[in-house]
Image (tube, rainbow, N blue to C red; front, side, top):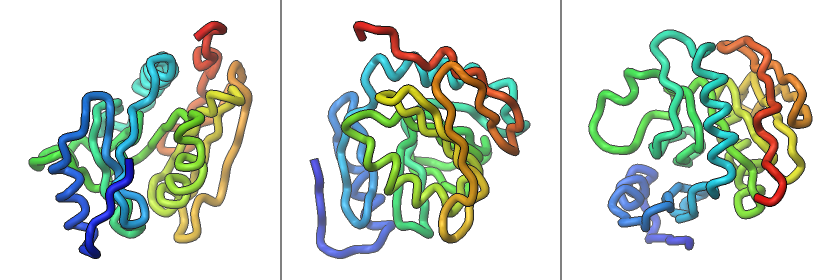
Length: 190
């Protein structure tokens, strides 16, 4: 579902998205002046994201939270607001009211690229995160591989590495550890 409104400010669009009564299992995000309502990932992606969360937590910098809770992060420079499937963000960013959090607080974002969200994760989110989020992980569920993007710049990420599930992926600073991706494979029949 796509909702557009009369031209307004980015903050106006955030307010409208917050006021939407989205059905359970759906989230509202802002893309290029539009509010997009889409489903959270399917149950089978949950296993991969939970595994990733458990592996990231011991390497999360002090004062940061590793979460899968549904929060909308404002990426003001890109005029986007996304609700990542997994994020690592400064704990102090959650002190305010509401469900909108400043995207400057993000240290890492991870998304499972599924058939319905593939273009969004590989294009829109990559471009917006690539300007300010230190690390972006894309778990490609169809091709069974994971890509790490890092070193953000005004033009997007300067570096990337892709490995098949089952191989080790180095997650760069501020995490700086080797990630075992063997738990990300989707069991056959799911």
